[in-house]
Image (tube, rainbow, N blue to C red):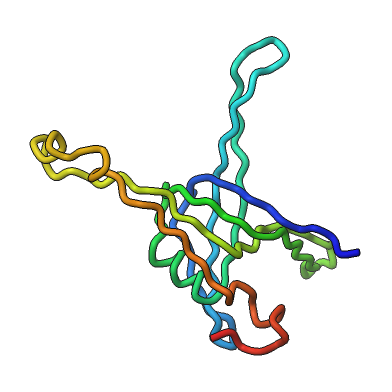
Length: 151
């Protein structure tokens, strides 16, 4: 039986995304998300916590994320968890878990008005852009897609 490895997170970018290329020329974009959670404690006080997640996207999705996302932008990521393992120069073992994004939705961005008069004239529907879902079949790195370069 296959295991299920799926995750959905929604949050805001902590910093601008970083776009790189693999030695084979495939685009890879990494960014950090902050996800907020509010809850009531046992003594009925409102509590807040923030979780931070590293996200990695590949190929055309990497290009779209690098072009569209900026620090503070809201985003929803659907993907899978991946654990990287390595040993440092001293032989100590390390590991890190990250999200490999397979689908990304960009949350709407409020447009900035140039003057108070312009802001008063703008309606709610004009002030918010529509979400931009991005779908790509080539979400997997070449290492996971049969060893062939993803166009």
